[in-house]
Length: 117
Image (cartoon, rainbow, N blue to C red; front, side, top):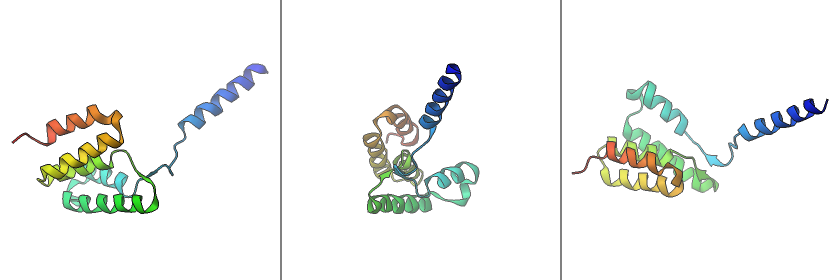
C-alpha cells in the first residue's frame, strides 16, 4: 500500500513538472509561423513574418508578458532571409540576451545565416 502511495506521488510530481505555463510567455503567431516556414514556406514570405513577429513583440510588451523563446531568433532569421544583416544581428543578439542558454545555437545561426562580407 505504501508503495502505491509513493508511485502516485512520484507520478503527480512528474506530471506537474511536465506541465507548461502558457501564461509565462506571449506566443502570438510564432508557433504557426514556424510551422508554415517549414511546411509551406511560400505561404508566408519573410517580410510578412517580420511584420507579424514585430506586432507580436509589441503586443507582448503591451500585455506585460515576456516574448517567447525563439521569437527574436526567428525574427533574426527572417531579417537575414530578407537581406537585412544589421537587423538580423540585432535580433539574434537580443535572443541571446533574453535566453543565454541559447547562445551556442544562436551563434550557429549567425555563422550559417549571416555570411561575413
